[in-house]
Image (cartoon, rainbow, N blue to C red; front, side, top):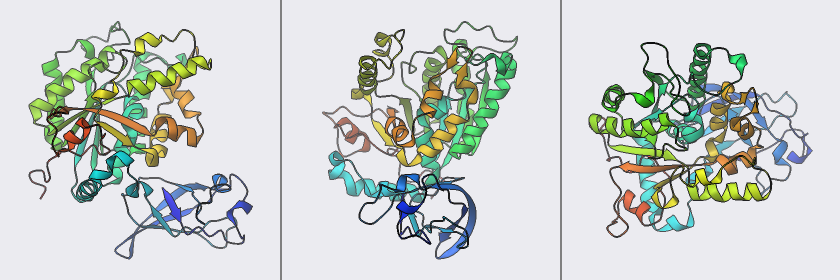
Length: 412
């Protein structure tokens, strides 16, 4: 987010503020020139302001307890009697004005779509295998949708009882309770409106887990029956978009592969207009891992060959969502899953991500990728002016709602 008109009272330049100073106050929403609501602001860190001057403007990061609607004008009302405060005049999303150079021919159409999507409330149902998957794969995209006024529903197939966690989290049953609570905390960080579990057991990394009597492992569940459970939620929500996983299930976890199959079947049953599959750019991932190995930052036991079959190659990806403005929400969602950050053998990948400094975190985790499964994007040779055609011609889409028909039934 870009903060304009920064005036630090009592000093002549923000560089005079001590690094790490914090600002506390209230966020007052201005709608139509009138204050509508006041929200507490956790902090406004000014440590990064020192070298951030650009055209006489300083860049700060306000962290509110909820996502701001896209393009909404807001004001901070701070107590002038308090020391080391920063008066902020206007907060706007700078990404509204930013486009990739290769998307220049479609700027006008993209702007029209963004304005329309901001007016019409859509519903996105995001389907995952375990608690924490939503934070890693698409929390930024979902937080972005919430900030634009759309409804987001999280669905987890399992309670994650077989997840790798430190023994301090207790038995699988006790771990499941922890993970459900973590899922709800992650949903709150994203701003999700509803959380549902399909009621299946976590199958384990290799499908080896024996669940409690009467509970079926998700990887072994009947696809049709599981799809019916998910389709009921899609119909209740009148979902415009369903997100699932790519055909590989990401890194091949059997529950993730099952999400791919069940999601596709449920979208067909419910008639959901758009099915997107969360993934990672395999080409980019492999380049990063090879560089990490050359720099001796990658553990020797990591098998690069396994990742040559993981996720989706760039040629199949249709959407690349810029979520850098929503990384505070994504980071909070990831941090909610404390049980998945450590194991008895040491810290896990989640903990390493959470230790990244904010600028590096935005660089590494500021993009999220999807493959459009339905409707099927046309080939490059048959692409026309459609949204899917833009992806087929090499211009990756930056809006998960592109492709949903203009006005859904009953929402005119």
